[in-house]
Length: 429
Image 1 (cartoon, rainbow, N blue to C red):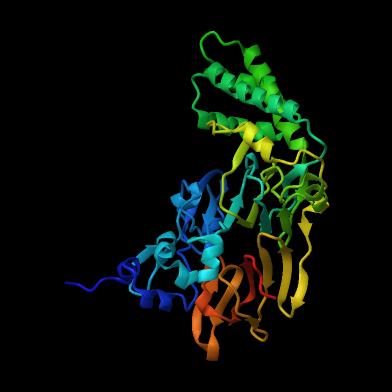
Image 2: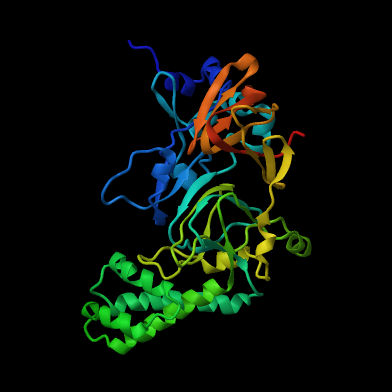
């Protein structure tokens, strides 16, 4: 009988194998890619993965560390580890058996047998939906690259009346349904391709597009009905976008999506994400590292996207701050901590540090609780005591740093090198 694989031994409770794994970086496969209708084609190249060639599908996200089966998305796209003997194991399955060894008893008592973040890389080529998250869930966007003039929509620019906005969004959804009835001969994906550039033009002509779509009209549908429907949808599309702050972004920016402190103080509830619709109607692309907690997304409005996706206006508006915000309230300055290390977001949910080692200046990281590392540029090696190799990371890779690693040194192999280190409370130091 062939000996059991390392993956099998881990699933059977082999504590020695788990302890050995917990002594170095845990680096998932980097091809945990997720198609999205708003995605682009840059993530494969960023991660050094082979291109798909002609007909490449839109990849919106890569799930960098997905190890929480209570979250629907993380459960569908779990991180997978390839072990030294070539066997593979899902990170959630590993933690289900060996959480104390990998994460430590104190961590498990606080967070359970999971990793309580869902960091992603996002390739935003089109507008995402207008959305919200449950109270207490915030998220941060570290901008890796952005086309000139790129923006994201975040926070309401003026106070909003919930009932009026809900009716506006419901009316827009009804008009989408009606447009499908008026154009019964058109495939929804084909309709989307016709609408996308037209919606992005603020002064687009409804009669012109209605004439283009005329061959697809249902029997008995009048051209004027199609024009009115299109004009209504165009109006809602821009009214919703104009209700949100447009925040310019460039590479290196850090945007923290959370209620401003003044809102938290006045509302008496924990900081939560503000309304957001990442991307912009002009299609100016953004590549970003998103740090967020697992949990549902409440989609309030999908920017007239076809095919229709599920929305929940009431849940979204119920989770949101409806008061006015300013773009400057979300832009975070990176502050020096020590040579090669800057800190940006430091909140009750997570702490972000930006590591920039060079060949002449490695960075020593003190021992702390389990955390994640995300390589945004270059290539580094991570060394433990007496220079023992713990693993290497290159651009587009992420790692879970188990409790058994302790302190370590990050040495640049390819410059410029940049990593983001994400800690969970309680913080050390």
